[in-house]
Image (cartoon, rainbow, N blue to C red):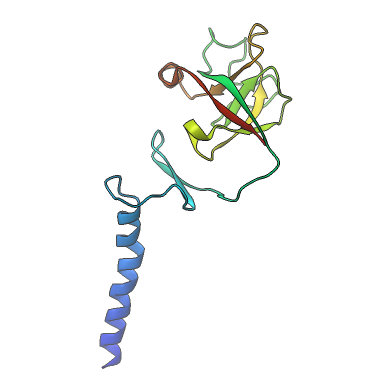
Amino acid sequence: MSSSSSRSIIKVFLLFCLFLIPLIAFDSNSNLNLENQCCSFDSLNQNFYIVSRLPSKNFKVIEVVVTGYSSVPWETDSDPFITASGKRTKIGIAATNFLPFGTKIKIPEIFGDQIFIIEDRMHPRFKDRIDIWFPNSWQAREFGIKKTKVYIL
């Protein structure tokens, strides 16, 4: 076999590995189960994330009501894009009154392996609820109210 034909075979193999296998693996109609793989797909933002699937032994599981909020004046105070801890709002911010600032949580039944950080507070009447920040009020309303397990990391 000549060196040019072996190079062609290698090129075809590389193209197959780089383009076709990812397309098959992430096709929504595919029968492959990605639950235990190293990637997560965020259908809301159409992004892939590399996630850790290593089990953690140091967490507490609680069942609470989870709601959504956004940075609109009727849901926040006078500066809607600054959290109670002084941080700027972004994806991954959560609010609650029963956990300290900086606490990391996961809500796997809803968000998979995404980690949220408690950086905001809620109205004092909500003592056992977690609020997830969304970029707009439509997404927060669409999220609704859900009772689910939350992992405190």
